[in-house]
Length: 255
Image 1 (cartoon, rainbow, N blue to C red):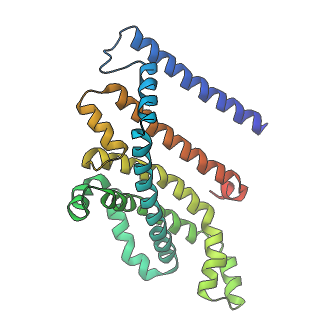
Image 2: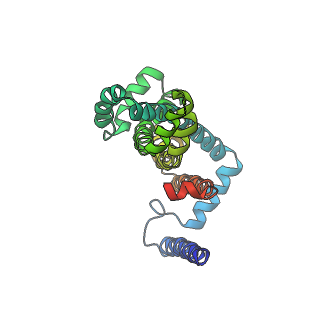
């Protein structure tokens, strides 16, 4: 029953996307909008193949994904450690909770000029900005996950003489990991959005920089080709995260 429902949902999603593509192609071919503002879908795909074959799109995509993943990796290390420390120590929670409450809602892209001033326009500034944007949801998710670990497990481990380090590795992390993974799934699109936006604003190569360069010269098919690639990259990465989660049913239930 669940498999049938999932297939039905997938079929609806495919039908929705195909309908949007057909309407896009018909509207463009009928001249309802200037090709400068809305090139036909087939024209966009021809341009996509062109920039893919000449290597410019794969190069830009690899650059952007490297920045996004590097920043997300750094944010994961810092965020998980900070979240667990906040859950286990009142002093750490007292010190960092106001900072997170202040910084989390702020638009992280507003800090881009500072990061460029300190670290230049290329990868380092983008990676650190992504880490800065992603560390807060990961830390908050980890704190909530570590705080929700069954206290009976913790007390039982302590009663058996378990050290704090072993408790962390054998009890806290395994118990909190499903919700930490859910926080990582939230942080993944944030890393992509931050990377693409930083490249659009600050340049330095990558998908966002090429998209803005193409827009300045009114190369609309290239602009749409890059936008579709960004959308596809986000969709595929999220689908991959879901596949990983499906391999561990307990993760999905707890998340």
